[in-house]
Length: 632
Image (cartoon, rainbow, N blue to C red; front, side, top):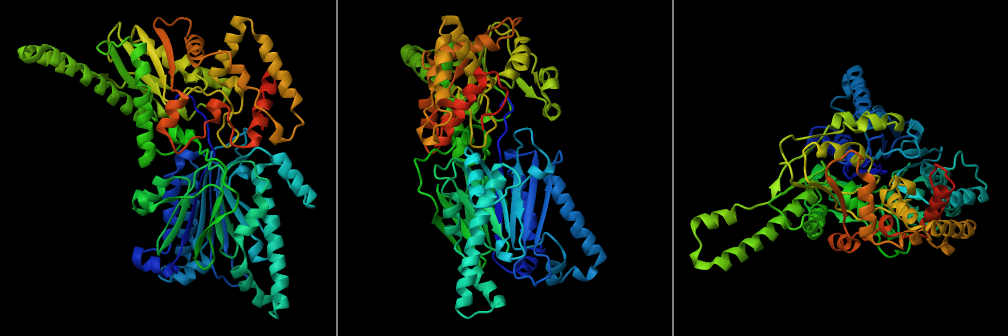
C-alpha cells in the first residue's frame, strides 16, 4: 500500500499440554514454548510494529513462588527487544546457576518467562499514543490466584464511554477511559464476582480455605464470565486472556470483524490472529487450523481441556475485507487466491482505460503488497490475448505462414518492475512536518522500463489518502514519459472511517471524500453538505441503535466513476505531463473475490454494529466544524 495506514493488532496464545520435561527431552529445551512464541510473533509482525508484549504463567507453583511474568517494549524493533531481554535474563540465570542446566524443575521454579501458558501481542499505536503503558498485555493483579487477569487483544470499541459509565455504576474507579483498560476491568469485575460466589459455595460444602482454591479453578465457568461482561461490547475484537491459576480464553466479536484461528494436538494448543503463522511455526496443513466462530470463545482450562462456547449471539457475518486486501499475511491459501481474483476482476476496466491497446501498455505494481493482485491482473491480460490470438489464427486458417504465426504468438503483456520501494527510508517518516519532504523519495523507478508514449498501468492494493501518489509516485513515473498513467486500486473507494481497529478515522483524509467534496463545489450543491451536517447534529444524543448514517447522502449524487475521475484530477501534480486516470474496484467484484469476508463499511457505510453509525456522523461533524480530531 502506498499510503501507510495502521492496524491494531496481532495476538497469540500457546498452551503446552505436556510437562516441561517432555519438551526438554523431545526438542532439547524446556524453553520450547518461549521459542515458539517468538516465531508466532515474528510471523505476525505485519500486524503491528509499534509495540510488542509477552506474558507467561507457570502452573502449580507453590505459594511465594513467582508464577506470572511479563515483558513489553515500544522500541523500534519491539519483538527483538523483548526476546533479547528474555534471553539475557535466562542466560544470566543459567550462567550464575550451572545446576539449572539439566534440571527442568529448577528452571521452572527460578527462571522467569518459562511456563506452560504464554500470551504474545504485536501492536500498532493509535491516537498518537505509543508509550510503554499503552502496550499489551495488561495485567490486573490480585493476591487470589484466580483473580489475576492478563489480557491482550486486537480490538477497538466504539462505546468506550458507555462501558466506562457501566464500571462507575458498579462502584469502580477506572484509572483511564481506554478501551483496553475498560474491557479488562469489565471482565475482571465478573471474574471477581464468580470467584467470590464459588468460594462461598465451596465453604458451605465443608472445605477449608486452602482446599477451596483448586476447586474454584476446576469449577470456574469462563464462558459465563465472558457472557456477562461482553453483553454491551460494541466493536470488532479478538481478545485473549489468561487467568492466574491457568485458565485461558480467546473471544471473537459476534460479526467476526477481527480474525482468530486455533489449532491443537496432544502437545500444544495455539490461538492466533493469522492462520499461516500457526501453519508455518508448527509445520501443519491448512486444514489443521480452524477459524474461531464469531460470538464464540475458545476456552482452555487449567487441566488442558478445551471447549468452544457461544458467548454472544452471532450477527450477520461481516469479517473485515481489508484483512484480505492488505493486512493479513498473503501466504494464507485463501487470501492469496482472493488477492489474485481482485486483480483479475478489475482487468476489464483497465482494458477500457487503455483502449484495448495492450501492445503499447506496460503493466506493473506498487510494491510490495499489491504483487499478488498484479499476478491476477496479468493472468487475465494473458487470457484476453490468448482469445485474440485464437481468433486471428482461425480467421487466417490453413494458409497462415510461419512468420504470421510467430508475429501473433509474440504478442504478450509487457511486464516490468517499474516502481522500487526504499524500505529503509520509510522507517524515518513519522512526523507530518517532515513527511512531505521525505515522502517524495520513498519510491524510485526502473529507468528504461517504459517507452515514450506507452500506457503505464500500475496496480496498488488500495488508495486511501493518495498522498504518496501525488507527492512521489506519479512524479517519478512521469519521468519515464508515458502517454498515460493508469493507477489501479484492487479495493473500492474508501469513503467512510473505520472504528474497529484500522487507523482510518478522519473523513477528510480520504481522497474519495475530497473528490466528492470537490464535485459538490463544482456543481453548486454545498447545501447538501450543510443539510447532512444538521442531520448529524440532531442525532448526537440518540442511542446508537437509533442513529442513521447520513454521510451516505454525501456520496449519493455521484457515480463511482465520477468520483474516480475527480480523484485523478486532484492527485495529478500540476507539472505532470502524462494523463492520469484512477481506477477503483467495484463493491460487487470485492464481494465476489472475498465471499467469506463481506465487512465493507469503509466502502459502503454499512456498519456491522450500531456504534459505527454514531462514529461516522461524528466524523462528519468534526469535518464540517474544522476539528482535526478522531471520531471515537
